[in-house]
Image (tube, rainbow, N blue to C red; front, side):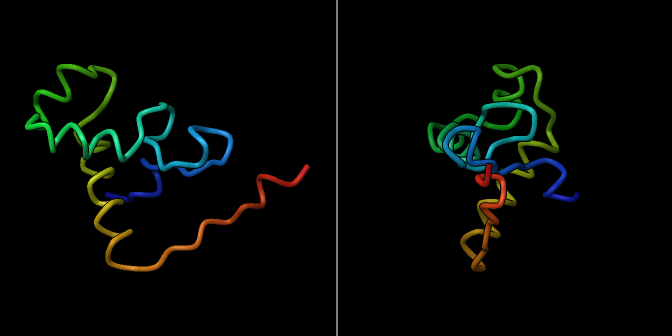
Length: 79
């Protein structure tokens, strides 16, 4: 899976928090759902417009963020 195809960081969407591309569902929100005890099947039932690969990408993004330093360009802030 190519995470960059599924996760987007844009300062104009959710204040720049990483989101599932094409949604306003943050990676943080997905992780909170898991913390609350939901599994992938339950998340997909609650958010039927999501795909399993997008949820997996959110988790992968969180793991990558913890494992390595990432720099996100802010060039989209320029007028």
